[in-house]
Length: 292
Image (cartoon, rainbow, N blue to C red; front, side, top):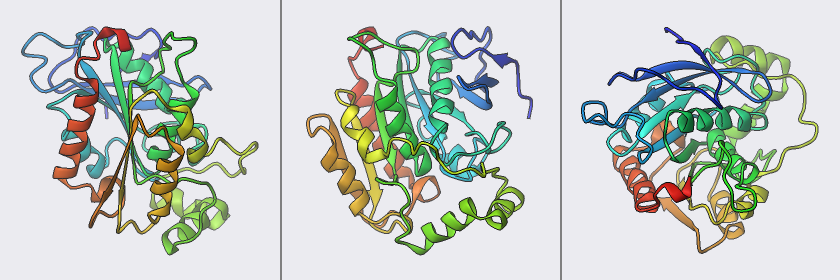
């Protein structure tokens, strides 16, 4: 991979965007280097609209053990290129990003850096979409990076989609989650994760325990929120999305319980991704520069 220039996410400008996009190294607020990629909306380059302020950008956050170069994330991101410019990135400890994974805690800073980069490229409207661990991160990010006193911050989001996310921490009710906890909490599990899954995990426990997804959800409104979950999810059963939905503002939150859908980006079918893209476009249609 050609990593491209290192970028200050708060001030970056990319002088030349091609139809193949651009790679960059972003520096998070806590000093971690994050690999990121930008792809313009289909047709935007040839139409001379690259980086136009009225274009929508979608920042896509992968699940645990993923990265921006994993085929499942690339396929999911490609499904949105006709509706928006797309930013993908690798969370800390994943792919070619620096640092070590904190499994949803400090990853909020990674997402914030990617959102800032999207805005620095000229996009006034930025939506966030996350899968599994990324789904919990987009919820917490939206709660922690809220506009203050009616203003805007470079890291705020204008719409949130959380797919296959947990509602609460330390869940061990499925075999898949028991295996994941072994991988995260045991030295042998972290070794297997590093060597076999190319995921470097921080060895220390959370201190303090971060804001949980279900505690974050009530803080997101009035930003539009979509929760998507499958009835065949092997990690988190349906009480997780239902708990999140019950905690959210009913005026701004939609819940889709998808028959036959498994877990996260690996299981997301093209028709589901298309409907998600339509939901984002509908919520942002007519939002204009006043929302960003």
